[in-house]
Image (cartoon, rainbow, N blue to C red; front, side, top):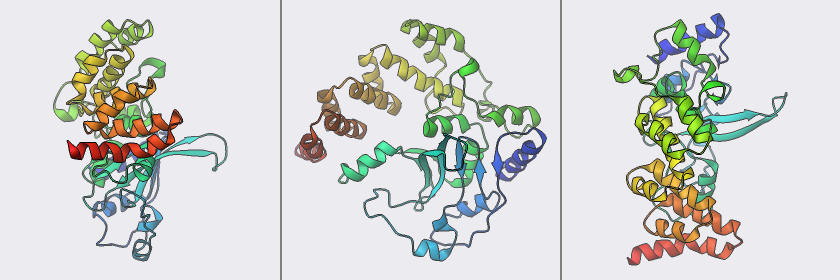
Length: 328
C-alpha cells in the first residue's frame, strides 16, 4: 500500500501542483542494528517535505560506519534514537529562516515511531533522570505503517496537530487540513477519507454551532455538541481531535471534577488537567498528582517551581516525591 500511495502523491504533485515534495529514493547500506522498515521506506522515498513536516534518513544511518561511530549522548534518556522527521516553521525567505519544532524518532529496539515534545525531553534529561518510565506520543509500530497512515494517509492532521500544534478540528477558514489531502481524495481512491478504513460511515457534527457556543462562553452547549462526536484514539482523526477539543472545553469551563474523573482512565484528560493546574499556579495539587504517579504532573510541578523562583525546591522535587512513593 505504501508504494501505491507514494506513486499517487508523486503524480498528484505533477497533475495538481500539490505542495508536497518527494525526493528520489536513497540507497542505504543494510545494517543489522537498524529496523528493516527503515529500508522499506527510504528505498521508495529519499525525503518528504509537506510544508509542516519533513522526513529523511539522518546522517547516522546513511552508512554502517556512521552508525558504528555515532556519538551517543549519555544524558539522553531515550538512548539517542535516530530522528527520521521534524516539524518546522518558515520565518523568512532564506533556507536558514526556519525554526525546528520537534523530532519524530525511530526506536531501534522495537521499530516504533514516536514523538516527545522539547519541554518534556529537557525535563527528563535534567530533572527526571531517575524515572523509570518516559511518556511519549507513539504513532505506529514500525516506519512503513507510520508513513502509510500518518504521512501519506488520513492520520496526517493528527500528526501535524501533535508535532506542530495545529488544531486540526477547526472548521471554515480556520480549519487546518493538509493541502494535498483534498486533491488526493478527489483524484484517486487509494487515500480513503477519515472513517472509511474502519468500515464505518463518516458522521459529521455541527462544528459551526460548537464554535459559536465556545466563542460566547456557552460551555454547556459546546461540550454537549462536541462530546457526542468525540472518540479518543479513533482511527477517524476528526473524532480523535474532537476528543481533544472536548477535554479543552472541560478545562476552560472550569469543570475540574469532571476532568479529574476522566483523568483516571484518559491520558488526554490527565494531561489537560495537569496543564490547567500549571497555568493556575496550583503547585500543591500538581504535587499530589505527582505523588500518585503522574509523570506529567511532576514535569509541570518542576517547571512551575522554577518559574516561581523556587529553584532549590524544583531540584529536590523529583527525588523527594520518588522517596515518598517508595515509603508508601
